Image 1 (cartoon, helix red, strand yellow):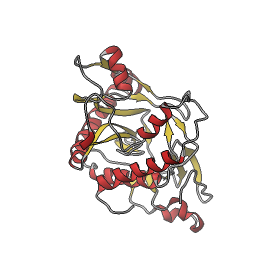
Image 2: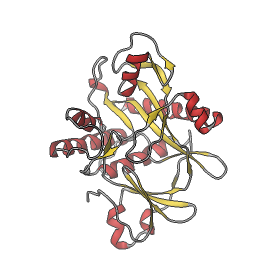
Image 3: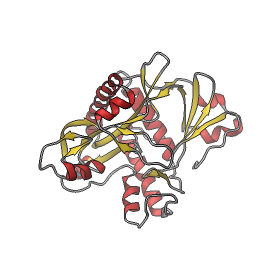
Image 4: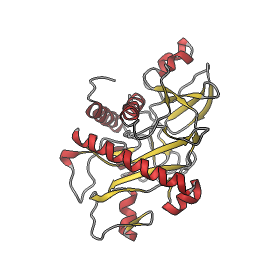
Length: 295
């Protein structure tokens, strides 16, 4: 079933985000349901994307497991179906996880490996990204000399995230945690990049979210290396100087950019062909990365 919004009466709703609905289980754990909603430019579209939630849920679980030696993740190995009424199980089946409650660190930890999107715009203006100076003469979509950590502030629902400098990040969350997130984020990106490249996929950039437990131990949370949080490019069609085709929601962003939408609510209605093509792109990258044959 396609799920725009979950409605679980057996658990208390804590929060509805852009894509995920979060329910309370007990003082230590909660249920995250990944819906089929899609957002672009920090605005939720009116139409859901079929299978998107299941793909995001399962691709995150794949990466959490693969990269857990670098940083622990928030997933608890408990069946989500044990916590909801039998009439509600179809809503959450294959699209939910039980997770450890953490204190979110209020930044998005962005790692960029290629010059694209807002980074390209900033580079053209300043020859730097988030106050990190870069070499002259780089072109659109060019690989950076090394991956860079460019955090952003975490905006509320309907608001826009803002890029911040490393100094601003340190002022916001503390120098020690900032430096550790920088280190962990680069390691995660580099490890995932090598694996994805072997499967024919370039991870151009991505964002991570982290939280702290009661002992201030860092965990990665929310989602990881999904088509929502990353730019995935097919290796065989990559070229410097053009914006490559992608396996992610950049396809939706590009269509929206072709309209006269002002990037504020309400968004334009997504055409059926954009919805179906987006679903196909999400499925394609999932099967390529995981080598699975079904969801």
